Length: 201
Length: 201
Image 1 (tube, rainbow over the protein chains, first blue to last red):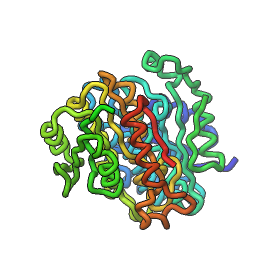
Image 2: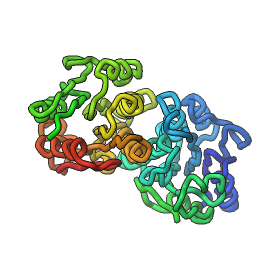
Image 3: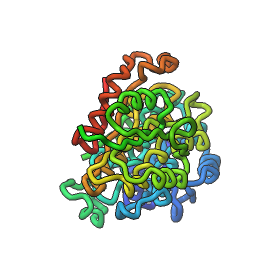
Image 4: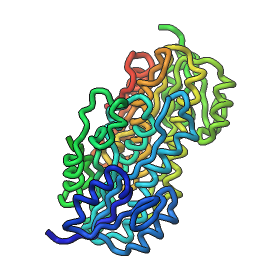
């Protein structure tokens, strides 16, 4: 297998740490986080994203596991709270692609994170359902626009094994194992698909 | 059939005008538009939306056909252009619900507009694919949150019969007749469904 240069955004989070550990044996990993990574970046700032790519230079794949959204009672959900998901999980990830496309190598890939909430809502997570839906619509559209063989997919898990604090909010959802999640990302990064929403389980 | 008080947002556009004309025989219609309606409103402003509902008072149904987005070459799509769809078709419609829920009658309904681009992208429309996806995710989530029997759906047509200027951008899509579009909205407003994405054809 060719050694790739892979940027992992959200590298210090639950998913990010697992993916770093799974991929670093065979690949060069650039760990990006708001704190504690190899490179600090704030994905809610286009300037910070631009600086990230200037610093890293050409790369083969970007994985994003970064997705802040508003989680909480519907009655408190208003325009202001909704912006958490827009600036974070939605535009944060979309801007990684819109800007990153100018730095990624030909035949490179972007893999973003969405979630089952797009199609299977749960109470308290309307902001995430909307942000996920936006990212998934974008992924399908970007796949037919990106040039030079650059691919894009999203991985869409339900609640994950290593986040038991969320289990009570996802009644009836069988948690996705970290191994299944990893394989979802592997399908996107090392496969040939584009415009796909990969649902690990 | 009970006479309903129905707000139509985007009432002077191609879809809006058709729906006004189809529904005004049997119902009280409040035509809302940025110009030329019974009431002027700017859906990109939460203050304007709040004023709209204060002015109209209690109502039975809201139909939105309002959906500005960036349409144009991918190479010009950046964070700034993306905001057109976020403030317009996405948050404009979402804020109509988040604010309007406090004014709508029990068992009332919201019907928003999305489009086939959510799942079937076309070149130049990535911003619309994302905004549609966000609204559809929101509709499914809001359906399990709204109280007092209030329902919410989206109507998702492909290119419509009365907008021939868009036909060249939708190769292979059979235009939706205005009658089919009207019946999609009728299913949402007069039916019992909630959380549905209605695809007229």
